[in-house]
Image (cartoon, rainbow, N blue to C red; front, side):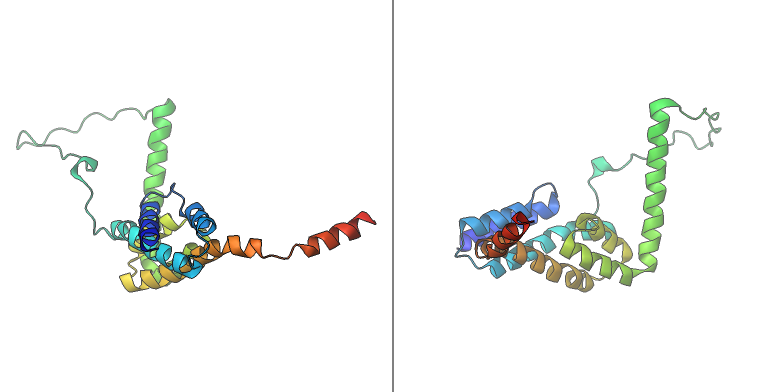
Length: 197
């Protein structure tokens, strides 16, 4: 049982770092394969793993994590002390290159606007992060970064993140049991009533 929980923790951390990895499918599959494993325990382990993995995004949003050197632009090295004349203005690029430059410029300005907005309204970010951790809308990876940008404390981030993730994954782990023991009699009754119409 301890091995299963450690694997679950690893998958939860991995899916927090790499969102295309689906911990939701893993939770349901684990509950189906091992029905003796308590679903609340599965939910708790996944919630803790998701929180630990998302700390990387949270601290990246805060600016506390330094990106590797290969992701930084290299500074231009001045060869002379005399300031160089500004280069002649190039015509704006057209075609695909112009489209990509405009798109990158728009995304950059949107990011700066969003960052300023988040820093002015940290309580709004607490609610958005808590909602996202429970229902997944807005995307949890994005709200995690924005929570860091907004300057949420680690304690506030944990309070917004862990309960929602716990409820979400506990319900997912309990879903095979709920479906198995669901009384499908009402569907039969509904079918009989509709067939007489």
